[in-house]
Image (cartoon, rainbow, N blue to C red):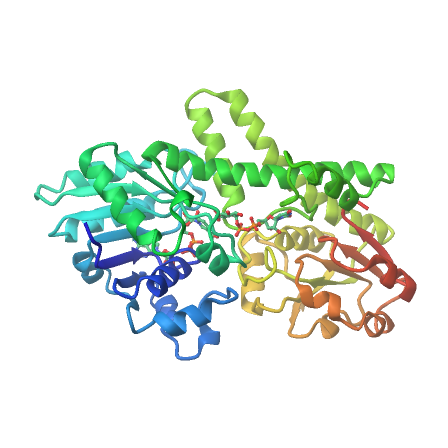
Length: 463
Ligand code: NAD
Ligand code: UGA
């Protein structure tokens, strides 16, 4: 079966880049990315490629080549569904904020809405691909909805979880470690799997395309994120021990990472992992384990989250303790607000939680991030109900220059590992700060020797 027309529902951090790369690699397939969010679609269609709704290195070049040729962004969901022979579902699956499983389970309402819309609109057979990260066995629910439409249209459900990381999305898509495709183990199922294998094999070596049953594929995605997050929490746990003992966490990470069984990647101690997925996916795994009565399994994975909460709080607490146990009315600069470098995404960023803690201690915060807008910073703090104003005094100011953000402050906190921070004139920054001048490096990215030579009191995670 040769796919000629693809529709992707959800034009977010996954749908946008994923479909752009497929479109670039497969110029003969028409791809329409649809979304209910009209302003997001307008931004994807913007002539000015700096106005794309998400920032990813290399993305604008891919969009420039494919958009208008075989890649289209639209709000007409029904039309795109009707015309497609393969439909990717890439909508958000956040943690539930209400009802049963509140705070743990994935909220699948957007997935269900998509399934119902496909069921209502489709007049020809479709392959429906789960691209969103979903709890194991979700495909059963989607299939139930699709198979009970009363019309003779046939659906095949595939699971094709996405493993890209933000900030490196385009490179990850060009050169994935693996592509995972789960399908039903029937003749029709295998045919559908092959149709998707044929698309990826245009640029991904065959040995990197893994096919499994649907449940293995769904569960592998949650498991991969849980294992990755666990590494960060593990090294962060050791970072606290390093601070007490004089060991240096960067040296420990290097020493253990050189053991090929451990590996050197993903061992950077930090103020805590953020992003839209690690916490959500582990909570979901914990919830699934609990629903099967596997309480030890649930507790084991939950500890990864608890450690992460502790790391964020510990960092904020250390700032207060070092600044003579009070930050009330003291100005603190935040360099970085995004959850990692090279993205404008701030979802679950550690910066938000550290800011909230310090605002409760009545600190004044001056934020600078190269890619995050002031409006986004305020939205994030609003969402946590952080106090951003007291008696008309604004407690959080967002600046468009790091030098401005650092002026007159008592301390600087590094929350994101943006490379530009290392290129600053730290001597100049020092001159304009209150003394003694402190730097709290939540990402271990600055040059300790250089800063100490200038006169800063420097402390970093795990050192
Ligand atoms: P996102 O919030 O950036 O994008 C989701 C989009 O879906 C939104 O624009 C929303 O308006 C749209 N949408 C929701 N319901 C819709 C509907 N019924 N019809 C049309 N559009 C609808 O989310 P994201 O970060 O792209 O994540 C999507 C999924 O991919 C999640 O399940 C996530 O866990 C998974 N994932 C994300 C990443 C990542 O790095 N962000 C990586 C791998 C997997
Ligand atoms: C992560 C996974 O890496 C992707 O494979 C997965 O597809 C994605 O989640 C998802 O399902 O959404 P992402 O969250 O975009 O990708 O970014 P990561 O590079 O994994 O970083 C996550 C967080 O961990 C960031 O806050 C980062 O700063 C932090 N981190 C990462 C550390 O603190 N130390 C490290 O060594 C690595």
